[in-house]
Length: 321
Ligand SMILES: Nc1nc2c(ncn2[C@@H]2O[C@H](COP(=O)(O)OP(=O)(O)OP(=O)(O)O)[C@@H](O)[C@H]2O)c(=O)[nH]1
Ligand SMILES: [Mg+2]
Ligand SMILES: [Zn+2]
Figure 1: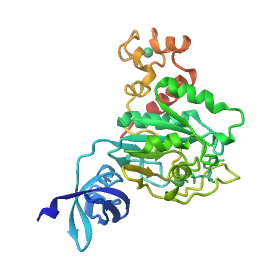
Figure 2: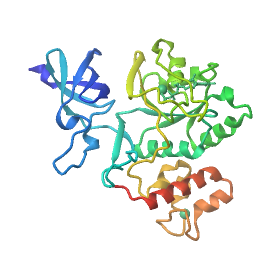
Figure 3: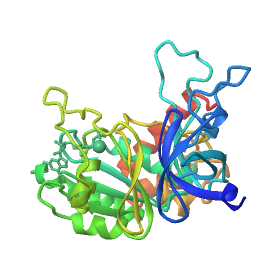
Figure 4: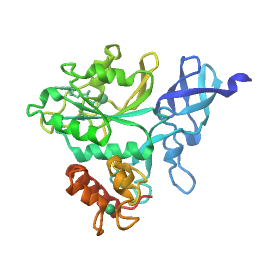
């Protein structure tokens, strides 16, 4: 039967269910079973996080009643992931495995806020490294510029543009910069990622008012978001613009980044990576380091270099599984 080979794109997943957009653009209920769904455990008790169906996956399905039963996930063009967060009481082994956020993305849009919560460049750099290591072209929205009285965002915008990133200073509240973000989102599949309360959903609503997704106030006591968006979900607010709104995450740790790889995920280091005295220089303590010299010469920013050193130290502390 021809329909046995139908393929659709997964819009969201929750346990054994989800939704899928089929080849005719129609939304269908998606049924997941066995190893394709979250919570699947192998007989040696090892969870295969990477097998679990995620937003953006292309699924081959068969018809069951009027629903789409996922048969197989087609090979992912790319996928964004992080180390699964530490859970209290979880066994030491298995707790830091790869958690795949979404697959088959054209873009990652990292959203940070200048205030409430306060801007943290090291947290931003971790998201950027996750994007670089996944090979997903990444852009940055510096949101809540209406709350940035000192105009600090201009310096950060310059810094990240110099690295090579597209930077959008925005205010979902006043609408400033929102038109540019809208342009950025047209005609592709974009994952919107960042901490809770930075305004990911607000920005999408501002760019596409018909979306009208729920948002909520940041806690006054902690300046932290309330985790309003609870599940990653793909929307198509206008034909051809696929946007995945995601739940806010605390500072992330990129998955699978080896000590020797990290320098390749800071694009501005590239001209210097082969210029150090030692071929496998980690730019941290070795004599004759060209990256260190570039920092002194003002060609690599001190902020980014310190961020790199901090990340390198955490990689050394905790090996990847
Ligand atoms: N002043 C100001 N407030 C904003 C801006 N963008 C969002 N907010 C407010 O920030 C709060 C959190 O916004 P959300 O859009 O829910 O944030 P989120 O990043 O989607 O948060 P999670 O779904 O929890 O991950 C809401 O009260 C928004 O009204 C902005 O540009 N300026
Ligand atoms: Mg949200
Ligand atoms: Zn070096």
